[in-house]
Image 1: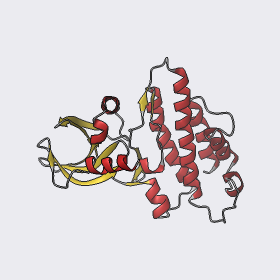
Image 2 (image 1 turned 60 degrees about the horizontal axis):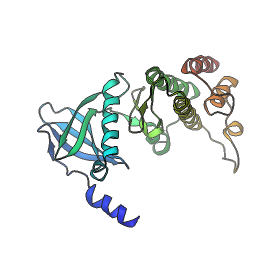
Image 3 (image 1 turned 120 degrees about the horizontal axis):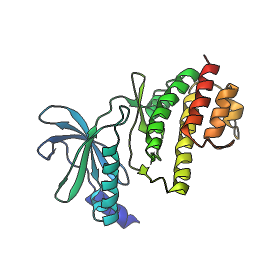
Length: 256
């Protein structure tokens, strides 16, 4: 295990700042290093437009299945055209290394807002943000695309507008893959419920009980409680986004 980590550190070092790729993109900084890829902020040297650039980790690029997976990720992103999802710009290969460029989404992610800035969200604000997020999930699920990683770091807010990023774990299925569709659909629904719960807890002022649950700690309307129970699989699970939309609209009405 130690040798494996050392290899990663040696071979997967981020590109240096100011390096220019494809005669086009100047690396500004490394934004993150996941287990699968390296993500950079870059600038188009001709237009001065900022973008996000993703590189398949060099150690991963040595494996055929990882290269195929990276190609599938790019193919999926190319097929998505939604104003609240980063647009795919282009891809290229340099010295055997695969890269792709996508739109930079400005703003702050929900994790930063909740846990570092301690920003409170009212019930109405939380439900309205969930409504935007559900709109994105509706778009994806209608195309049999499942994000599989809807978490607070991957949700960006800019002046009240919500965007979903990081499709590294996303997968597009065929209508015939019914069992995997069921599993991935419920995973996305659970993530919606968990995100809503994080937002609702932002106003919680009480002392957390050792074995307390959100049902005991949060004072919510019946409509919000029902929505959360079904998203989290406590009650009978939702089978389609349309049913979530109906209950979400009722929940919004219950706090307005």
